[in-house]
Length: 316
Image 1 (cartoon, rainbow, N blue to C red):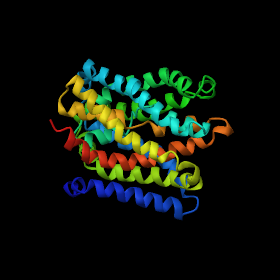
Image 2: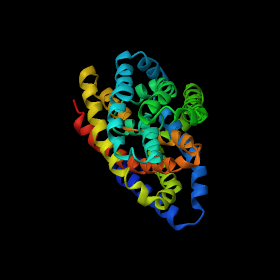
Image 3: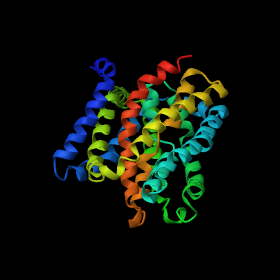
Image 4: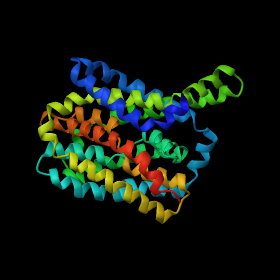
């Protein structure tokens, strides 16, 4: 069963998104229930991902200063330049502009690890630098927003959701995984948890994709006309950002798994974390949250494709 799920994982992910979207559109009130399931589903998925990576390997990865430099340059120098160019297409609509900037300027720190692992990338290195990426976002997002959207915007954003997301999506599942790995040396039950979570990786990701899409699809439907303008921007980002990641990897010349991790770090965005920021914006900027939801849907489809494409491109 596990081998079958791994072999058919891409069709299963697409099916999960389709089922989630169908439920979100067809069942009134389902979005509330599905939205409540997003956080626990993501925490469980990340726990399974962290559990599959030995923490001794994470410690060694944190000492890889070349990889740290690569992801920082990619995400906070090259990607902002790309985002500036793409965001000019919606610069006339301030709400859409804010949504595009919020989501595309923030590198993912959660399910990027899952997709990196599925593509044969170094999940341990991404785990090791996740706290650094989170702190860099906290420090640089107000600066980048001020440069790209105007100096009045940063003051309207509450950074508390970033802190909460770090605790929920990084500290909690990583700490639980570390404790489980430690107990597995002595307890059979802990070893059984390790085996079960590793075998459940594909089903967990299918469920997570389904609840995320189901929770957000009605918002996109409601604002579909206005949001059409941002879809080409997100598609273009998913095409150009991996190319930037490949170029950075060629400069720093890492091994293949690390190069794939670099590509996914630059391509995957922090939509689930920045969505609460957008929801807290003033009413004139309310459409920003729908723009972020749209990015989530586009990105999930794009990640399913990149899981197959990146290993073929970054093969040596």
